[in-house]
Length: 553
Image (cartoon, rainbow, N blue to C red):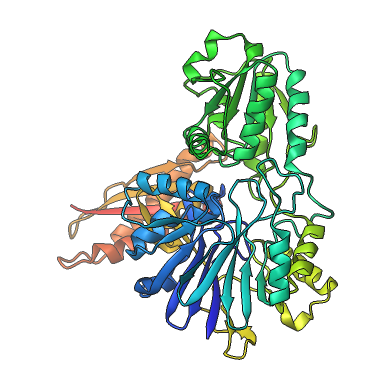
């Protein structure tokens, strides 16, 4: 039996990771992450829940990567380290170069990494596997065909059918059609833009638009886009060169990715065009273009730090123009809007995709998803890479092109699609709840492991610390020490009365304790917490976290 088990990427945007089981042999397709939302207090990164693989790590024979975006490769260091496994990793040249750099940063160096060309076939986990050239917003994007006796299971990865890509040939539609002729058993297709009509414009249309915008800017230009979007950075470099402007690549990931791409011959800049951040002041404002990270409003990104006046090398001016050559990922809109508001406060100009055609999506829209379905003509369709809305919409497109509804599987993380020895597909038993694992500093864990609920309560309601001394037998309780943090009161006149009332509640609790040598302070603290919380809830109409500390006299 073959099982396709998505561990991430279904019912959400990001952290794409899929297990393909062939009996007791395992193949992984992509190992991605997601960036935390504002509600994930203190969390650095969000990973797929790979607990299912904990006792199966020795059965993982290979990892195949569709492309180098973080939502498809970013979890690799954590998964490899936590599972303590070293399977070979396959991908395109740029993908392998970016992943090798990432693993080096995590001091993971004993992994065999194999660059495979489009159309090249190799064996892993009992399957014959090939990668197929696709177009996306990063070079070296691939679809992955896992060949089975009943036809190929085709993982599209992220794609669009750009007919004039800036980096070479368009997606290999001929091979996709040939796969359709040979028989595609199951299409695991990108659903990201299933809600957008039509066809995505070509990346080639962005370069002229950037040049036109640049030509109207009187001062410095700051372009923000994804650091991995080498195509876009290259077009910014080309437009700047035509206008005789120097280019600064700002942000470690921006410089690293461009240098990796340049080393592979994918990106290039004329001699003397690129300058260091410290050299910005050596040139007039109308001779400088800065390419920066921060298009998603990330708190520590270069653009966000510039917007709040905390960047070490760049202080924004009122005549600067900030060009957003990206659109917010769903969930990041608030952070992006906050950054834009800071830019307006400075007096800088802001240009985004609503003002000029300076961005196109890397994901195919509805007509392109239909084209994929018609080219490959799959027996089964398994919509991937999208929230539930987009998965349902993608399923509807499959029905529109003639796929029977009972052959379309609208899944979720942790729910396996099982293919029997006759090539028939059906749902299997869930392997988990499809949850998340959080990276919190040097540690990773499930929500309960990092006290997620307590962090949320602290952020929303504040903290009340109650320090009290257990009286000796026959003694009167001493007044406790009470400290509130982040808990607003109505006015100053009520502060003292409220705290006096809480202090009296604590003293009453202490007076009622049966003081013994074997008094369990932990149990007593829990009871004190309940009493204090009830008083605060009743009299202050607040629910702060109550932290009781009981000391012996």
